[in-house]
Structures are given as C-alpha cells and as structure tokens.
Length: 266
Image 1 (cartoon, rainbow, N blue to C red):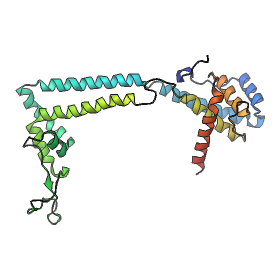
Image 2 (spheres, rainbow, N blue to C red):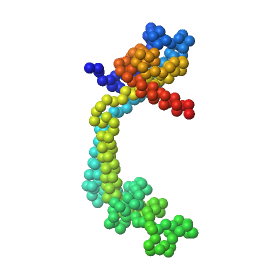
Image 3 (cartoon, rainbow, N blue to C red):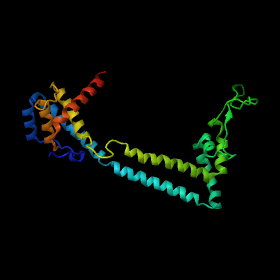
Image 4 (cartoon, rainbow, N blue to C red):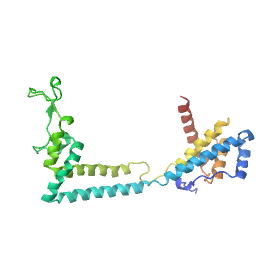
C-alpha cells in the first residue's frame, strides 16, 4: 500500500546539482538555448519556496490554536468568577472602568441586558433638524424612538458608573459566549475530524513549474507520459521531494495554472 503523503514529507527544497540538471534537460528536451534561464527560474522559485515553507512551519497548528483558545476561555471564566466575589471596596474601585467600558458598549446593549434598571440608557426621538442635534422639544407622544449612540454617551457613562461590576461581568459573559463559539468553529473547519490534507506545497510548486515550462514555449500537459509531467517529476526528485503521486496531481495543478493565466491576461 502506497504511503499517504503529508505536507511534512516535503522538505525545504534544495537547488539542483549539475549532474541532475543535465539529466533533466536531456530527458525533458530542454535546449541549451533555454537551459540557463530555466535553471535561474528554478533557483529563484526554490528560494521563494524555502522562505515560505520556513515561515509556514513556524506557525502554530490547529491543535495548538485550539488549546490557546481554550486557555483564553478559562481565563475569561476565572475573571468572571473573581469579579463576582468583590466586596464593597472592589465595587467602589471598579468605577474606574467607566471611561473604558462606556464608550465601547452600546446603549441598546445596556438597555436589553438590564431591562429593569432605571439607570439603563433609554430610546430617544430623532433630533429636530431646525434645532441642530437637540431633541425636538415637542415631539409627538407616539413618535418613533431609537437608540442614538451619539446622544447616549453621557447616559452610558452614568450607567457604568452606577453598576461597574455588573456591567463588566455581563460584558465578559458575552465575550465568553463568543469564545465558546470560536471553539465550536474549529469543529467546522475542513478535516477537523481527520482526512487527507491537501498537499499545497506540492500543488503550488507544480503550478510554478508549469509556468516555467510554458515560458520556454513548451505545451502544458497532464498526461502521465508527457514531457511536462516528466519535467515536474524530475525536478521534484532532484530537489529532494517525493515524486510518487505527482502525475495524479498534474490535472488540478494545470487547471489552476490556466485559471491564474486567464486572470493575468484580463
């Protein structure tokens, strides 16, 4: 049974040795006229891939990201618990949070989160254009009212100053709900329950190799016995990559190359 390749099986590409390059030119039908420019293009390509792959492999994987989010969630939950245990001195000190929370939270959120609190900001009528931004002095009793954030900042300051601990607690609990949704979102990502990961390093290498092949006037082909496929397989082997299964990846890579080529010529 053939080994299932992973992106980890593709090492940082190394430049092709002279003896291997001569064999590639011979078997792929690359003329002396184009040999130097093709090799220069390959060297530049390998250098770019080396930088990309090194950077990519320093990034945390999905499992690590999930653990970090779980850790952040636990800290939020601990903060909620700690705040709920504050005494009179802590409640008094927490008034200092008002300049930070009041501008960040909306009047509508405060009103809906604390529907029975008389300090919660209320809806207001639209301002009278003839009097600037002040509310119309004789607005009809049944006139529509709205939460107008530009006019509610003072009310928001007053509310947070009145109930700083309750407001902070409620805001943290909303963040907690959101971070819980982040954890669920990990389960909806592709291959979260396993399955073959796309070999994107190989895919984009083939796309670029096809571009180099076309630049010297060669015809792209995904046929297993074509010179184009032979060129890609030989280059992969010479730079230290596994070449098994590469021919089956050629059709998708060439399709992607054609798509990119059409975008560039538009």
